[in-house]
Image (cartoon, rainbow, N blue to C red; front, side, top):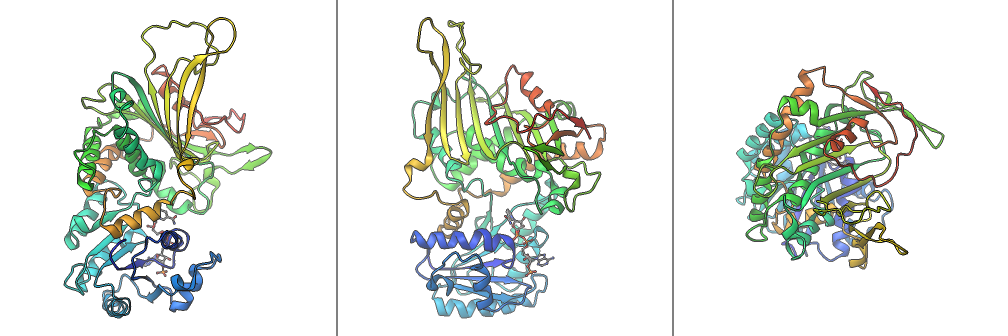
Length: 499
Ligand SMILES: NC(=O)c1ccc[n+]([C@@H]2O[C@H](COP(=O)([O-])OP(=O)(O)OC[C@H]3O[C@@H](n4cnc5c(N)ncnc54)[C@H](OP(=O)(O)O)[C@@H]3O)[C@@H](O)[C@H]2O)c1
């Protein structure tokens, strides 16, 4: 049970609070995981009373019980007005007294990112960043995106550390809150059978795919300034790579685990300008027809520039230069308007040294793959070869299939439930440390820079409902491999183009 606390949310009138944070808190309450004395204080410029905030949070009629609703409070304040932090301080003093929480506060930054340092500064100026105010621990949760490039991420780290100690900072990566992401560590380090094979001697390559079937929806304005590399690869997908590639930590505490993930990021071989041209493929969805329905091109989406070169798809090949992974390629692929929504890690093992059985029944036969499905239908799938029943020795691929839901009676906890709970418990294992974040940006920055400066680097158009530009397939073909396709293209449209 976490210590008694108040969760202060900045930007509480926004989408994230109503759609993710409050439902996560309610789910924790249903699991009896909220502190005995607990309150939420939402803040925002929008004028609202406590009652109006409570109604807004329960807009969808989630059926929150009365006692939970009574934990929700609101104060109108402009985060850019330093004076307002003194009103916040007074309100906290009152709530602290009413709920007897003894000065333990979590400040959750659910505002647009340009306000992160302003809020940290305002809190510090009002003395809300350390235990001198009411005693207790003060923590700061920061939403993504954390920086726009290496320089801005470093600048934000410097600013935040001016007011908060690194141990008080919790940088959210909601992929790390997913059960199956955490399970990678248990799967690797609690079983004796896979870890001996988990290296360059037995693994041919590792692929990480994260696809969405939807487009940018109403987030065109944000997305057009970000793109798939910043939105998905820099944070979530490199974190998954780290879990798959890291060395066993010395212990299962936050620092030991995060030390190992940082080492992975620091060992990623930087991509040279030639590598960026050859091994990083960016794409953008163009219109197509899926089952008779016309799908808009990215450039026709709301708030997207009609000549935008922002990538809605990226695939890349890179190497981790260390003892375990020397010479083994890693591939990442992510995009919008792909045939299905899936996130998975595919560990492709090397073939047997000699091909004894020549009669292959299906095209995957003879290849061993371990597929760690992060979402949806979380689970683990092992593909291996067996004899096709009947005469002769025809080889066919078969699966050992495990669904994570079978381990749990109810539904799996949402990422935000786990992350907020961990922060309350003071466990930062699943939060990104500042040095890891900067190491990821160091890898990504040259790619963004090259795209910005060099117009001759192509943006490939791919029809919505396909697995991205054909050039992304060629990345693996040059390695004698193919991506794993969790399902087929939804459209036969062959209208690939260069934008
Ligand atoms: N929504 C998601 O699913 C999601 C997922 C991952 C990460 N995030 C991140 O989480 C954060 C919050 O997301 P969100 O979707 O809830 O954002 P949002 O709805 O755009 O903004 C949250 C609140 O911030 C306040 N705000 C907006 N512009 C402001 C300004 N210029 N000055 C002061 N306050 C301002 C607004 O409240 P007032 O007008 O009342 O002040 C707004 O309701 C963002 O950084 C986002 O990148 C969101």
